[in-house]
Each structure stands twice: as C-alpha cells, then as structure tokens.
Image (tube, rainbow, N blue to C red):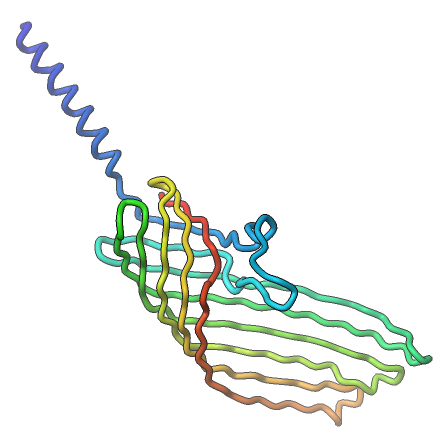
Length: 220
C-alpha cells in the first residue's frame, strides 16, 4: 500500500513538473501590434515641422505557423475643415474632407539572432484608398467642388527587426520597398453643371519606406 502511494505521488509530481515545462515553452500563435510612434514622439522628438511620422498603418496582426506566418496590416484616417474668409469684400467658404483606408496582406518568415532579438522578412499585397473633397465657394459659386479619389494597388518587400521584452510582449519596426500602381480620378462640379469636368490618370511608382512605425506587440 505504501509503495502504491509512493508511486502515485511520484507520478503526480512528474506530471506537474512536465506541465510546468510545457507551459514555459508554450508557443504563441497570435500576435497583435499597435503603432506607438506618435506616443513615443511626445516623449522623444522623432520629427520636425518639415517631416511627418509614419501613420499609414496603426494595427498589425500575425498568425504564426511552424515555418511561416500570415500577416495583415490596417490603417487610415479621416479629417475635415470648414473655414470662412471675408477679404476685400469677397467672402469665401472653404470646406474640405479627407479620408484614407489602407490594408496590406502578406506572408513572412522569422529567424532569431538570439533569445531577445529576431528579424522577419516577407511579401505583402497593398491596397490604399484615398478620398479628398474640397470646395472654395465664391460669391457667385464660380469655383468648383473638387473630388479626388486615389486608389493604389501593388506589393511590397519587407524586412523587420524585433526585440522580445517578455515571452508575450515585444517591440519592433519594419522597412518596406514597395511598388504601386495608382489611379487618380478628379471631378470638378460647378453650380452650372454644364461646366462640370471629370478626368483620370494612372501612374506607377516605387518607393522605400525606412520605417512603417514602431509597434508594441502582444503575443497570445
């Protein structure tokens, strides 16, 4: 009886220790990150009045598999203004709206330098949609309402570096070399609709983005 109790105790302790080891080596499949670049800029100045901080994307999500990961980045913004001027007896009302939606979907691989530092590289498809409405209505409505819509589509090659703060928390940033094809559509709408105009143009562009922002990431 004593032997049976002793064996049972040993098995219980063994299972407990193995469970702790497995938990300590637990692999996190999900990763979600928030762009904290602007928050850091309030503490340490990262830009001046002649430059802008990266804000195309404010959220990133990754799903990790054994040898690679799926990834998605999302971002955008909306702003508007309404200003009235009355200079030289010629009152005008300037209005504007600007909105943008960005999404990038891709795949990546990650390798470690050591237990704290790692790097990732991959490819992603990119879609940007920008809408800009602006008016400058004069005394007789002689100025048009201008609507610009820009759609960017393309792909990017990325390289990122990450630092592990805890097993469930890390910080990192990525650089992207991207190729985009853009379609810009402009509409000029007057009070006299016979003067309305509409046109579109296309362009291709390649650019290097040194940093897509600094992201604080949680792993779960």
